[in-house]
Image (tube, rainbow, N blue to C red; front, side, top):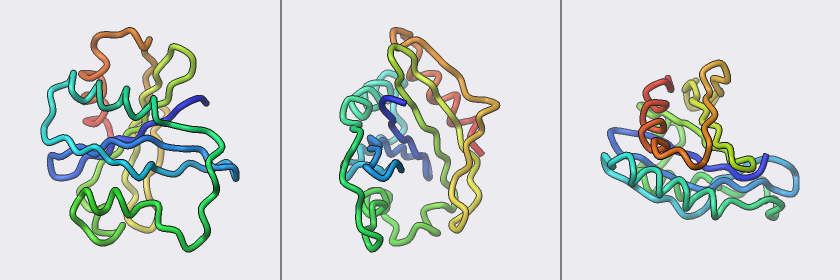
Length: 143
């Protein structure tokens, strides 16, 4: 997988962040979180494009005591992951070559996190003018 962006929806606001693959092989969200309040599809598409451009492979693995979720929680105005998970939806956007794959997730709660719904994931060419619209549709698929 090349690049990855994460989109979270909570109480009508969207939070877009780049994801980075660590040396240990797992993904962590970037410290930068772009907050969009009921965006137009093209604004969401641009935010995701920028997040994908920032996504990196081989970043340092954070120590076990690190809290890579802090920037997201701060952007959402909550103090805990359990609180954030209430009322949240999530989709990921991966970029591999010139194909975007949009995957909605099922919210399993604060302890279990999000589970990918691969059966409803879609792939689009990066040139598709409807990427932002499809992202919003896929947020509706997330549970």
